[in-house]
Image (cartoon, rainbow, N blue to C red; front, side, top):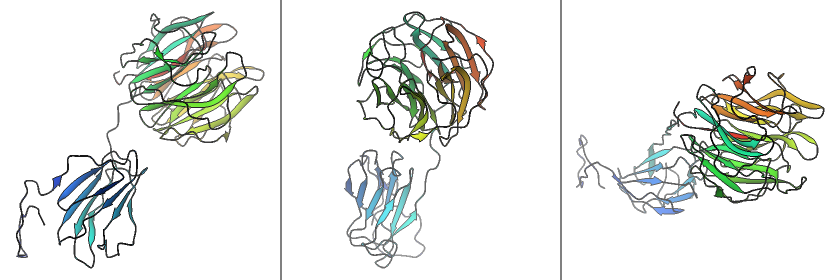
Length: 424
């Protein structure tokens, strides 16, 4: 065996080849589905794309040491299997299955003897991982004030809406927007009178970039949510310039703002719904319109997969908005129901459970937009009451909606909003 000896109180005989640090860490990260490892080495095992079977040495001596580490905190999704290659593992024959399936785990293996074989000296989990700072600012953009517009309005970390910023990109309405990468945003899709498939990235300073040719089905009146800590998902919408062609299609957004190709929808195809992130790394789409007002939801897991319909709680409605608040919750608010516009809200727990209606505060309206801001708060703004309005309602970190604040910027409806910036 090789290693570094600090003391030899048992006076074991033999020759030990010293190394500078005791254990040699293999610099190449393992991404393959199989790997054969050697004693005296440490290995970074990255299972982001696939599970991995690790074959231990066919022969070993007492004290031989191997360490394996979850490089990307993905063993919970794609686990690691140890093949002890004919030797025992904790006293069990090689026919036993040994799996490690906890995110952030590391395993320190020591060989004992032919009876017990390999024994984990430690199989620790690094429970804490770096957490990105909360998103502090927000941006509202696009919409319609008699015709499609492309201006934007930035929101400070204290919830103050800024004046109009001259627009960049194609003027349109009923687009959707979502935060990506933790501190940037993307606006996507919408209608100019005809549906479009294009996006506009927003930097961490709130600057809207020019059009990027879209990926996926051109559509409007869709929604978007965060998922997986730093990614986004666009979903559902109206796919035809003539009303009535509703879809359940989703498109994932990477943490660098790249939109993925269409994914076949799960759940009821619908339009004029809303979506927001919850539970730190998951999302929820809810409510909407199929020709009838809906009260239903679809949860999005931490890898962007939509679940089947969940029967709704709260007033069936469409043309509403949603945003994350606190550290791990969400709120749906406002909208149009059978009989008229409402100001009601519905809170979403960190488990994705929608609560019953809360009586509305502020002007009842439809076609609003909403975003997280200030790390743990939310804001609803703009909309339509029979005429376009410029007003906002702040939501505190307990999900309580405040009274109307006289608006800044061009009154409009059908805009979209998302958070950006780690800096307050």
